[in-house]
Amino acid sequence: MVGGYGRGPDILHGVTIEVDRGEIAVIVGPNGAGKSTAMKAVFGMLNVHSGSVMFDGEDIRTLTPQARVAKGMGFVPQTHNIFTSMSVEDNLEMGAFLRKDDFADTMEQVYDLFPILKEKRNQHAGELSGGQRQQVAVGRALMTQPKLLMLDEPTAGVSPIVMDELFDRIIEVARTGISILMVEQNARQALEIADKGYVLVQGANAHTGTGKELLADPQVRKSFLGG
Ligand SMILES: Nc1ncnc2c1ncn2[C@@H]1O[C@H](COP(=O)(O)OP(=O)(O)O)[C@@H](O)[C@H]1O
Ligand SMILES: [Mg+2]
Image (cartoon, rainbow, N blue to C red; front, side, top):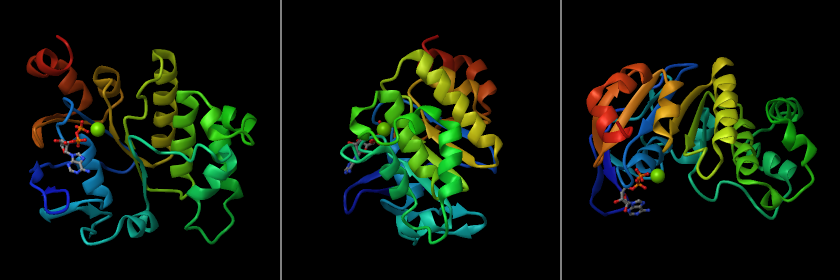
């Protein structure tokens, strides 16, 4: 993907990212590297003027984000990813807005994955802790039964224990056959669970490998993992 925002300069100068069914792919890299921009490009929120975005064998580069959701993409943005003045349950219902069928079973699955959300289903989402809000955001994205779940820094601002729990839930989601594409600033921990890892620097791929390979790469360790 090569592209940028509106008529502005290119932010992505050639980023290649791939995730297969049921895999976890993790994007790491310094602030401003273009990680969020790459996620938005995959989701159709910026102008990819060369390269392509393939989903299930189909070039979806011209589709709107909403059409991509209909195809099976779920996206949890880095910020403003829940409706704070709405209840937890209403947030989940909003996630199902494109569905015409009965989504009660999916909601139960989300509550099985995140039991605390069932307990707090009638509370305003804004009253929840950071980790619980992220659960709402992930749950909301799962309501469309996506094939691909995209998460931009799902563990931002949460404690290490809550981070571990969230990663365990993300692994659980991947085991159901949903692909995960995730940006993470907790690079080491995220690469530990990654089938594929991407280090982005200045809008381009700097290092690519399995999570294990990147964790063992001396250059990656020195520059991005604190040694
Ligand atoms: N909405 C936007 N409009 C224009 N430029 C943006 C926008 N969002 C981010 N950028 C620019 O794109 C570059 C990459 O940002 P971003 O993708 O958010 O980085 P990262 O997620 O890796 O920290 C930065 O230079 C940032 O200023
Ligand atoms: Mg970002």
